[in-house]
Length: 213
Image (cartoon, rainbow, N blue to C red; front, side, top):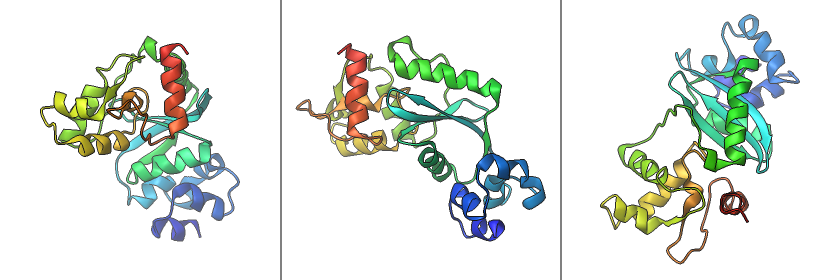
């Protein structure tokens, strides 16, 4: 049953529970017996990409940190671990997802400290994946200091593409590395917070935390 659901392309986590496993850990422990490989790799046809991840709690709710061999490739925010794991799987459908061990929890703790106090910075390599334009936008966002905001139109102008305001907004929405690539610091020209992929409430809370309010 598990093999059939994975082949049909459904989320790994949903297939695990639908197949009668009460936790992903229980399934991953038996994955070689059940599938001959882990669920993520099976669904991807054995794609040779490994991403480690772990989930924690912060003042914004749940957060998930994932990293490849190159660096942190995702910091996701949400209401519960299950939703975050599904999002990770959807963002990296061809990856082998590996739950982090105790050593990886040190990285999780480092990211937690950064989320709680962004002004400290995050001294970790990032694996930033996107189009050339997206990477230019994200590079500009990383230059915005904590406690400050910049408009979408100002970012477009800084990139030499003043008419690309909507493209800048789309690049912000496509960002997979929350807080470290601070798309929450981008607002409308009139100062309105506008949207935020992980919820306007989290955007407001992050800005308030950074400004000391």
